[in-house]
Image 1 (cartoon, rainbow, N blue to C red):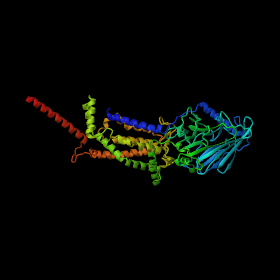
Image 2: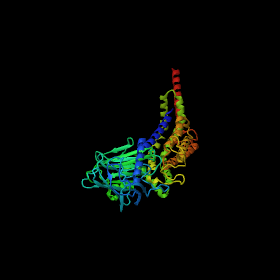
Image 3: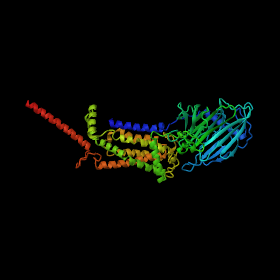
Image 4: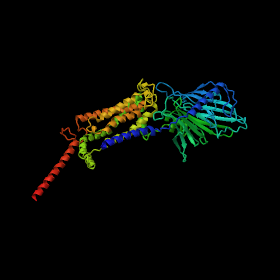
Length: 623
């Protein structure tokens, strides 16, 4: 195999490797864990017990704390803010639904940030840090303006009465709300203490929007992030790594978040100097494909306590999350929260991604269809990159023109690799070409490919953006033309997506067209076949579940490359010297100039050798 073939294979491997890095490393692929069967059985048993408690309206909990409340109203009720429609449940003073009024999908379906299906309501309390003992008593409630207040009275193991008042407070225009837990007891009440903790508040079972499968890849995921204090006092975001589906830390944190691709739930104690314990769980193979829960345990109290935890539940948009840096920009007066760190981080080319986002937004204002905007942006990028593309094509054409001479050198010096390399280097130097000349301009375009990948994979405004009704209703998810009754082998899904097929076909045709009119295309052998067929097939599997917007970009990119190559091939057929800057005027030879010059040089060398031999023979005869 020649150097050109080896180089081609190396470049293909680099492209594939970088693509996988983009998908897995840059986008922080997390560990998947499976809930043991024993744990699932325990969860089912616990739910049965909870339902029995609710049905019988028994105020007694399964703990040492005795409820003395007489509340009997278990009927759920709806409370509305300007941004949410919230369904509260008096059982446990919890939330069973948190529907956002804005940011619906292409079908007008609103997102419920509390994705029910298995597990408890959101914002339940637990005694101490024992997650097996939720407080499922029926709380009395009242509504006072922007506050929903729940209360219930208990007696501790010593017979001392205390009251839990749990208040949800909302403010206009805010996805941030406060959950305040006030524990007040009679004289002699020593506070709550279970293994060093007073109580735990949790968000469970899962953050919306709803899903049927969760592969935890670059295209869909649930991750847990923490914002932790470093030794120098500065804050740093970290990705939680689960061990057997569990995580906990008693380190000082600013906040802990459960983050999806477009939405986050963030828990941030008002007083982060207390020794809170932060916990998270993640289980797969459940009725909703994957459970993700967050918990914050309040350290023990001596007597009464009053604590507030702020929760942000909403979209991952900087216009909201950045407002919590300056106290004057949000209704809560919060500042320096670093909440925008909960947003999925971009690549090293995030600055370029932001420029492309600005351009796409501008195009959308002109043509209010993001699909058309993606096509127009792709065309504009292709035009701007034409000088680099032209340089790559020119270098490739020159190398193709030298292919016959390369073959001649290889055959002539097949038993002398060193001489073969010397002759090849002399040929390249003589003609002013480089084997890497066609590759380097392509590599310089790579940052734009990475930036477009990040933009079209995560841009919030593409969520619910329709391109073609009936086919591509949402550019942020894969389009589906059919659903099978079984999962497709190797793909792991029962959905048939058309765009990956079109993309793969366009990539194969683009690469085959590149080889047309290429004198050396047949010399590539296995390397050429690998690039033409194997690489598109590999990308087919990598991008099969990619968002429609991303595949639309890649497909249009391939079509434009084909048109560009058609133009190049047409010029080569009309004039084989079209890409040779030193073409001689009046020379109508169809032989490439590079080959002709090299042949002339060899002829001159042969003539010089022959003349030298004659002179030597003549001199010998005279002697």
